[in-house]
Image (cartoon, rainbow, N blue to C red; front, side, top):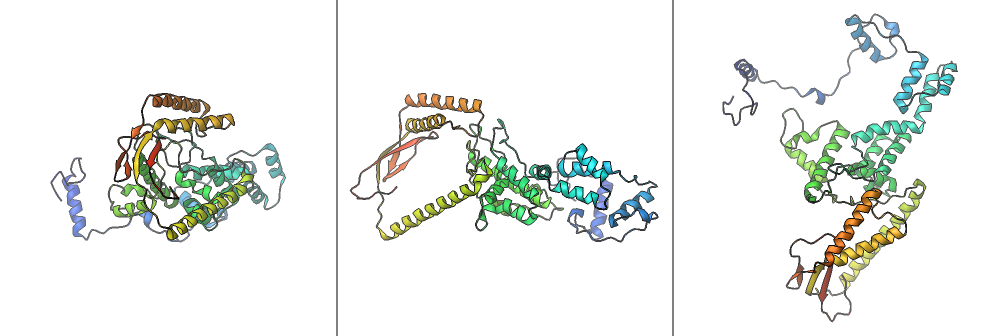
Length: 412
């Protein structure tokens, strides 16, 4: 029991009263019995309580409800009418009230399983997936924008549709979770499997000018860690981000062990939200798109394998650089030309921007081009045949490298 204000708890607050301190001392002298937090104690089956109105009970849970009502001297509510039942289950499963035709049909159905048939009908409705996907999307912090100061648009609707379809197809929970955590790593992963991993990309991004890319990349990693644990385990895992808690079964060091698992991502506060996954707007085209992507991946792997084979069989010599410079004008000219080509084809060169924002971005690009024409290229510092950047290099710049060689083949 320290009196030192630097270590005494509660820190920075008035000290405990003498009676409270004495009570703590007594507790310690008695052995300081400690129980786990109730949330981490596995529930055990309880004996069913006795009740007086046994005829009201239809399932074991009813006994507990009725026993408490009888203890408090309260009566249970009367049984709901068929109209009330259909309205409740319709709102619960689809978020929509029943139509007059659906209500009329249910009231006319006197069979013993009339209610069960209505439940089956609602579960088969596309509205069921839309209703219950909203619950999961809230947990996954789904949004069609990036958050922070400008809250710019972000294309995320394919993930939303994937979650809706998963509910409507009654995808087993284990497959539902695995696809979102590591769908791209599954054997023969489909495009839908990769779309599912957008669960990991719902983090906010701050692409405001002047922000530090690495800072907000790590902010996204920490958000990803917190969300994964809160969604899948119902646990505020990020509480131990700063220090361990005596009532949490997770230590401070364990938080950073898990964070290290996620701290391998490349996403940062970049305007293009890279890395991204191209997805056809029409779902019917996804199978074809997935096949083209697999073909592209195989070709790239073949190119890499061929390059490695050549590297192993041929002698390689470094090619020393004589001079070099960074030319922002060349890079901007190339970018402006690409934008104009897309505009000529009717393609929005800024797909994540509104038409107004896209026009403003293009105007900014043209202004940068005019300024670049007034700015000379920046020479690179060459040391022992290697080029080194000097100062800050504008984004989108082109590099001009000059070298001399008598080699018959050059590979970059």
